[in-house]
Image (tube, rainbow, N blue to C red; front, side, top):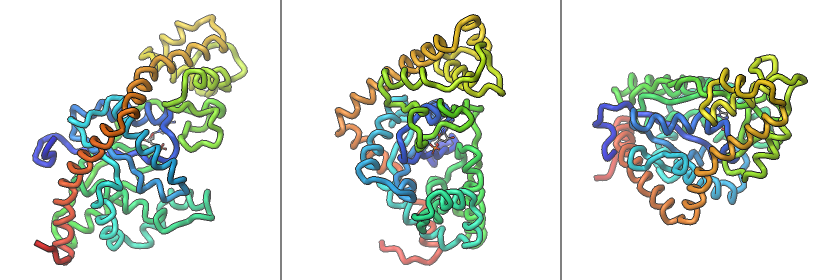
Length: 337
Ligand code: AMP
């Protein structure tokens, strides 16, 4: 995809923050769809390390996870020949456009972002300016590539609205510059819940990691986590929203074996919770095995990973530069020949 802007396919932008390790929910809710979208769209997929530092991070963890995320992107089937795979901080235009957008976003507008309010309430000791400006950096990510579609969950809807407002405002104030992006809600990927608290979404930064299955957990750990999964006081393996524990396990089994929920219920009619938990664990272990093998091969070949990052950053930069040059010209920055 040498010049994605001249191709008729729509442009998709999606990024994952390397805060916390990737877990089953990320795979089901985001990564799996990213793989599917590669053929139909021109996709730009990023490891959003710049967004990560809006919260406390150990530098060594951030560095390790950046490699991990890129290796996992490749291991699950993202293809650097089809999509642009890059690390956000390696494409400096993100920071550059973010500054311009900061100056075109009102303080009041940014103050209304509910995620900022939630995150600052959660970590009052580190309410940094970057956390406040997170949505304008996200707007820059999206607008740099003239993105048509941004796959998002409900939690990012308000940020996407802000990106659209700022883009529209810029286009009106100067002249058409940015494509106005739309939210893209791929066919409902299942929502995965924490195994120890099946009413809470499984998350990569959950406090209790025993309820979170990470994509890189070894087989024993995965089996242990499933065996200890909280279930409801019942025995039937039936999907029922009032029984979140067993329903979550049924969803996971269904997704990882490609079996419809009703067929899962039929398969395990008469079986008990303990046996079912073992089967779910085994299904996940089997599914992740080839991904983990590929991941390990890639991590043993860091030169290749760096090559992918470099080539991704170059491709992304080329597109981003075109947008940024236009923006700089319009706002009156003098550009060197
Ligand atoms: P996060 O890890 O919260 O930054 O989310 C990154 C992406 O993974 C988003 O698209 C989320 O919707 C998706 N995701 C994260 N956790 C889950 C989950 N437990 N179930 C489904 N999707 C999830």
